[in-house]
Amino acid sequence: MDQFLPPILEWISTTHGSGRHEHYGWVIVSLFAISIAKRLDRSEKSENQKSLRTQQIAFLKSEPLLATIYSEKSQATIKYTACIKEDGEGYRIAVWALQAAKENPLLNEAANTFEAIEVLIKEKTPFSISDFRPRNGN
Image 1 (tube, rainbow, N blue to C red):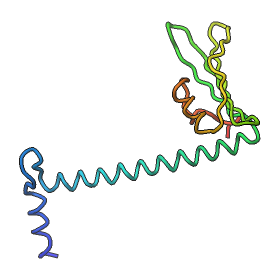
Image 2: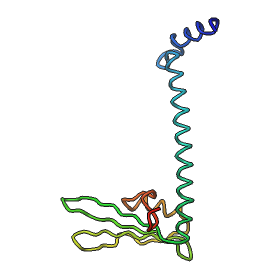
Image 3: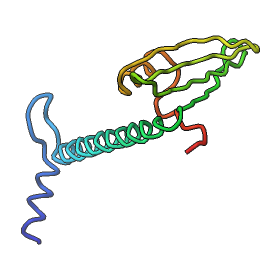
Image 4: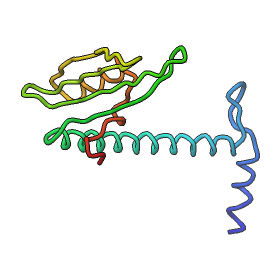
């Protein structure tokens, strides 16, 4: 062990590279560890998104997915309600805004795939796909 430790400590404590790309060995090791952690985190997020999508598609077979959020604009509370339903040709999303006891439809669009619905939600609504739950709250 004593024969391995001094060269490792020397490499970590000396600079490597040249010019503006010059870094100490410990910085290189840290950057490498951070890049691995980011890659693992991205992979985990991707798996979680796939799992959520699969679960939501399964719920849509039996009942619509609902979401509600509240927002405050100009000291007035706005209640946004959204519903995703499976219809014969794909999926449909409808979004309403309730402000001062008046309900305004904001969006009522259909899409062939659930992924297209996710894009619509992201681009045209204040919701994210993870806001949607079955009526009974599972």
